Image 1: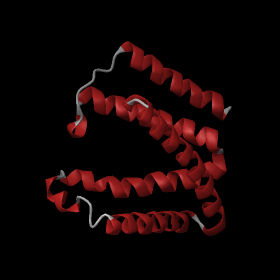
Image 2 (image 1 turned 60 degrees about the horizontal axis):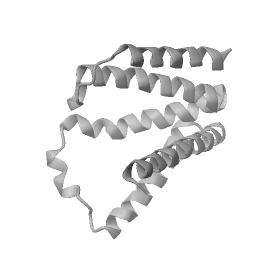
Image 3 (image 1 turned 45 degrees about the horizontal axis):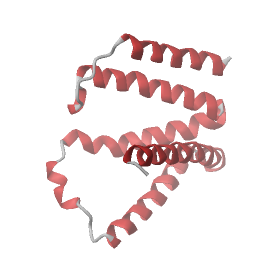
Image 4 (image 1 turned 120 degrees about the horizontal axis):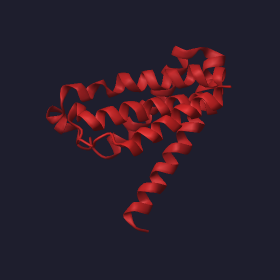
Length: 145
């Protein structure tokens, strides 16, 4: 299997996991609350990754000083993501929730690429990308009606 195929399979597995996690987060949200659901999600994930790192004898954690300071906000952003999914999915449904989330991701990603924000390589926002984003925004309208 070529490297592109492996990357596609990994991305598909990630997409499937996000949809399954959203449904499970919605169940947690309705049963125990948003903050509690986020806690359970992060505690479970934190325990699993801690065990993996212990098995790997620390991995590459020693290089933490070479990472830009703002990269450490990823954990807090993850809390926002998981909380937003857990809260929105049972109220809007999975399709509407993910249409909005993915569309917002594309808009912000296009701006990050276009301006090279946070160390990203600059990739101009061309007509093709703008049309793609417009279609995503139309998708929000179609899934919400």
